Length: 70
Figure 1 (cartoon, helix red, strand yellow):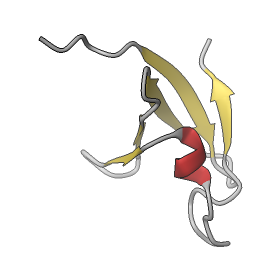
Figure 2 (cartoon, rainbow, N blue to C red):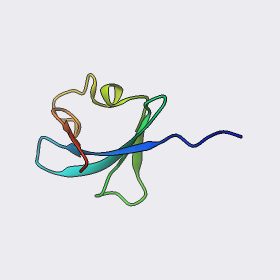
Figure 3 (spheres, rainbow, N blue to C red):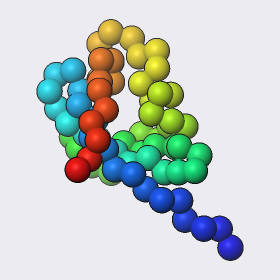
Figure 4 (cartoon, rainbow, N blue to C red):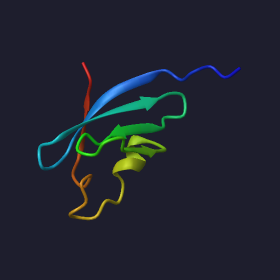
């Protein structure tokens, strides 16, 4: 039986000031980000770096920063 991966919550602060909640699962590092303005919509990525990499200007995630959840 597979063992569930531990989850590490974080906040993603968008360049426009909005804050989205996310969680990183380890090992493996894949992440899930909740889009609070859209019902039942999440983005899944292989890593936080992968989530934020190569986002063009104008994309919601362009310029976003990760803040540790406390």
